[in-house]
Every structure is written in C-alpha cells, then in structure tokens.
Length: 451
Image (cartoon, rainbow, N blue to C red; front, side, top):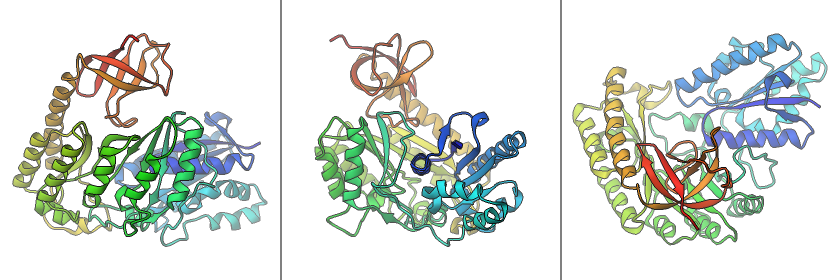
C-alpha cells in the first residue's frame, strides 16, 4: 500500500479540501501517514491569499524537495490555491522536480492522480500534464456523498456550505483563486450535518467565503432557511458561524440566531474598516452608519453576543484622519475579538493600482497601535469574568495534565483558550461548568464547579 504524508496550509476552508483529498485516498486503498519518513508521496494543499502565504508554500515545497533527495522514488504533489493562483506556471517552472500540480477542482481526484504517477514513464508524462491547472475558473463544490476524512478533533467539524465569492473587494484575490460563488443545496448540507452529529461531532462550524451570500437570491434556500433547518436537527450539538460579510447580514439572520437552540451567540463579521472613504475604496458595499446600526441591532437582540472582526491598516489612501476614525470606533465599540492585518498590495487587484499607497512602516505602526488598544479591551473584558461560572468545552490536554478548553466566545485555534489545571478526569468534547480564576488578554485559568 502506498502511503501519503499530508500538509494542509491556510484556512479551514482549505482544510476541508484536504479532508476530501484524504477521503479520495482511503476509499482507493491508499494510506495516510503522520511521518514523512514513512511516506511514498508528499502531498501539500497550499494557500496563496497573500505573499506571506505563498512564501510559506514555497518553504514547504523546498522541504518536500529535500525529502525527495532521500527518497528518489518518492512523489511530490502540490495542490490547491497556489496552483489556481499561478496562472503563468511560475512555480511549475521553478520546481520541475514536483511530480504533479493539482487545481483545487481536482483535489477530490487525488487518488487518480497518484495512480497516474505510477504508470509507465511515457504514460506518466502524458497524465501529469492533465493535472496542471488548465481551468480558467474553479467550479467544483463537494456534496454529502463525497468521501471525506475528518482531520479535526473528533468533536469538531467544519461544514463548507459554499465556495468562491462574488463580493469583489478591491484588495482581495479570492475570486480569482477560488472562482465565483457556488452553493451546495440545503438538503446536501443537512444530510452531511446529520452524519457528522451521528458520528459524535458536537460543534459544527459553518464556513464559506461569505456565509450570508449562501443562495442569497432564494427565500427557500438562503442562509436564514438553512439555519432554521439546521437548528431543528436532533442531537447534542452546537453551530458556529464563521465569515459573514456585514453587507449581507440581515435582521432575519440575527433574529434566528437570537431565538435558536443550537447556534452559538458568536458572529465572525469582518468589517475591514469604518471610514466611509476607505470602505468605498475597498468596495465593501456598506457604510459606516449601516455598520453601526447592524452592530446595535445585534447587541439588542443578542445581549451576550461575542463579535469577532478583522481590520486592515494602511489601505491605499488611508490618511491619519481615516485611521483616527477607525481607532475611535474600536475604542468605543469594544469588540470581543479582533484580528488586525496590514494591507498587502496584491498583483492584479484593483487596489494595487490605486494612488496614495501607504508605506508599510506606517501601516505596521497603525496596526500595532490598534493591537495594543484591543489587548487592553480584551484584558479588561476577561478580568470581569473572574469569579463567574461559565460553560466550556474540553478540546484536549497539556503535558502537565491541564485541560485546554473554550467557551462559546472562542472559535478553535483563533480565539481565547481556557486552562483547567489537574483535570485529567475531564472528557474531550464534553461541556462543563467552570469558575474563572485568572485571566489576561487571551488566556484564562479555571476550575470545575463541584456537582
């Protein structure tokens, strides 16, 4: 049996693609290994959203080439977003030692690619070219029948309901990398959700480039309709929503979350900026006042809501006044969680052609200022939790026997963690009531509440 060593880079949407690739292998009697030394094939599913992601992908390719030097018969397969992004085959030409470059649409056929690499040399040469990125735009979207191996913790699973994006933000390469928006059917998603819940998943995390764009022109199949049906499913589970473009977030969706039994009071709402001038230049299709009104409505309907957002500093044309508007907004709104990014001038995006590009040093300085503000906000919020009892879910354990946990306010691997010392008796995936004893801006310590 051939064994494949897998590396998955980038976002959790990419991780789902990697799980689908893994499913393709297992149903075709190709094995997986956690160590490259045991592998016959080195498979990398790449990210290419920004330059740093492409740099990381290139570093991993170099590691794969070093692996191949010790395994001349080994095969290297590079897949995903980097392949989609690289229209000029720059990486393909730079790394001729790579045996196959796979478009994201072909990831579900990874087993067929591997089989083709072990045909005769003449056939392999012909077949290999088939798996170069020949497509002008991605079109694939998986369904509930697609083989998939869950690579997350057993009690957590990501449920991708759509792929691609039609928003066309001026700084973003996603539409050119992942293609236009295409959505699964509600029935397909419900069937997969039922299967995951039946297999022990307790936290289903809905993902897409923009959840609220899901079948946005259909009243019967849009996100609101989907959430109502998912919430009606039977079982011990909760839903978490990641990535909702604020311009598509409706009062109906907010009301459904507020009244639901199975949806965490957590919203991932990437705002990117608050200055009207910058929002317009980004093509965010929403204004400052509309954002403020939506946040006000969210908090009125869901008082305990945790809102995660992201902001970009140094977007072309961002003046000191624009930055102060953003800074004041963050100080006043007091978001639960924020990720900050400096603007990256991505080739072939409208923003790259804008005048008044902001120096990187200025963008970084502004980012650091905002991070310090949010650090204080987060620390103050967490300090108020000391002495309170909250419900948490156990994710795993540290070497010293302390349990690692999260509350409803925390998505896996991106938000706060709660450490519970001397808790080997707690069960991963189960929920417990704990008392918060200590806290800083992103780590809390707790102890179980006695029964």
